[in-house]
Amino acid sequence: VGLDRGPMGGFNAETLDEEFFPDGKTKSIFICGIGYGDAEKIFPRGPRLDFDKACEII
Image 1 (cartoon, one colour):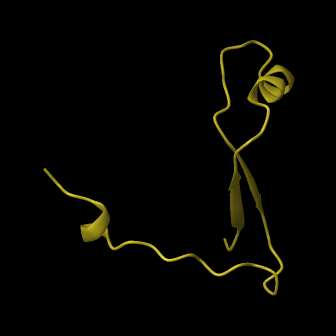
Image 2: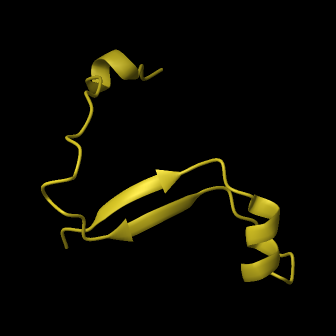
Image 3: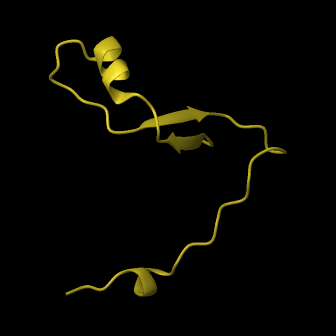
């Protein structure tokens, strides 16, 4: 689909929940912007550890 996304922290979850989930049955834990970014302004993906370095199957 080619969508870009940007997870965000540091938002006021209580205010967001009051606005979007007034019944109190659902709580937000993070928000994420989704859309089509300008290819000239998108930062390259940061380095990632290989699976074997980041995980151990026990």
